[in-house]
Image (cartoon, rainbow, N blue to C red; front, side, top):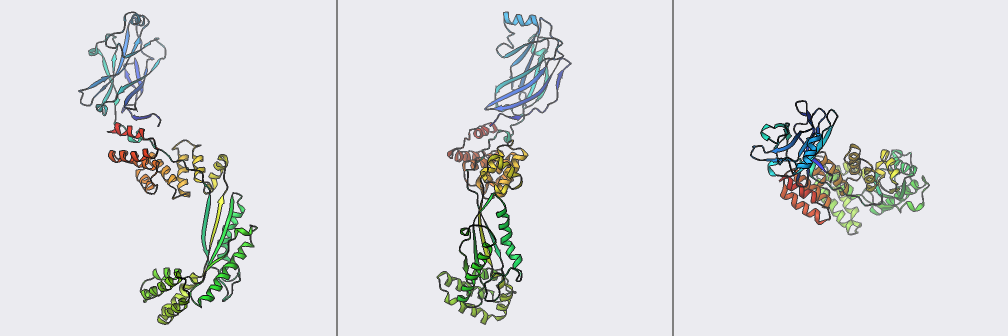
Amino acid sequence: MKHRIYIIAALLAVATVGTAQSFRNFQVSAAAEKTVVSLDIVLDSLRVPSNRFRAFTPIIISKDGTQQQRLKSLLVTGRTQEIVFEREGIDPLYAGNCDKVRRYNDTPQTYNYTDIAERQPWHNGAEVVMECDLCGCGDVDKSEQIPLGRLLPPDPYDLVNLVDVVPAPSKKDRNLHGSAYITFVVDKWEVKPDYMNNRRELRKITDTLDVMVADPNVSVRQVKIHGFASPESPYEHNRMLANNRAKSLTTYVSKLYNLPASVFAPAEATPENWIGLRAAVADMDEQTLPHRQQILATIDKVLADLDNNVTTKADRDEHAIRANYPDEYRYLLKEVYPGLRRSDYDISFNFSDFTLEQAKEIYKTKPYQLSLRELWDVAQTMEPYSNEYNKVMQTAVNVYPDAPEALVNLANVAIRQKDVMKAETLLERAGDSGEAQNARAVIAIIQKRYADAEALLQKAAQKGVNVSKNLEAIKLLK
């Protein structure tokens, strides 16, 4: 993780001592277990006699005033004083921990000051002042102290390290499922496009295939049609009708497209759609179907027989429902049975593989055609955690809602946006990869659950994730 600023001075405005010099851009940052203080000391208006010097020393003072830590001093010398220091040594108050700079009066001059101190527990909330020795006499009692700001507690969001999952390259095989309710003439199986609502129902299949066939990035691998009939009429008669109608629909669709014959799988059929009937009855209440429980029991008997490949009892039980519950049977025949006569279609297809430049263009209009790895590669061309980058990560989850890699990476984005609730929700489905455990540990760190965080980081480390930064963050925050 890059060096992060974690403590910012409460006072960021320019501090001045008379009109001599000013202190700007004061900030404190974390590096390992150090406190790094930096600021600009602007000397533009400071005049230093040739035989004198001025000293500037940042001091960290605890909140209760009982402890203090002097940092490196800056000695600004005149020409003669610079020679004296070289010959006779530096004043004992500053010797061994100072920088020297020669002042060229009446010229713009800025010194970029930085010092590193061992971080102490009492640093949190401590005040930083600039001790200004303007007489050059080394007498601290005569020095003036100018407040620079306070050291605020570290922000965990600036300390933690998030690790994304790099998706592996994968095939872009997809499958689309739908149902069309084609109406056939009684006891016939010829597809009549203009009969009843067939034109509309056929378009459910053809509109989808039209788009795929017209897109050069799409390859249709297989079209499979499965026909269903309702339970009225003899079972064997329904078997014949369902099989022939499924074959007829498959043939009809295949003739519309210039696709290899192998694309169209052999038609399949279910002679009587008892599973659909049971689902419909189970959703009804007793007011609609007074003998609902008895009818469900009969349907369950039929399904048990069909599971054992016993088809001879289906007609008997269907007649039993008709004879024992005639009013309810008429209701089912009118309201439910038509919906049981349907043709399910499955279209298997895939998208082309794209170069990075192609993927960047495809992402703008058809991101669903990109693999998870291609979306990741597109994101890597953007500034991490920028709006554009975050949008790609959200798109990856939209296209692949169950992909653990996409969920972890978007959770990391949510953590960066300080949306812990969203991150937790995403991580519930993200699996137990090292990156997922690391993200959960980061949330625990933010929530000050350090024991939980350490346990999660141990799991992440066992799966190859470098967790040293987050363990370091826990030490700093504790």
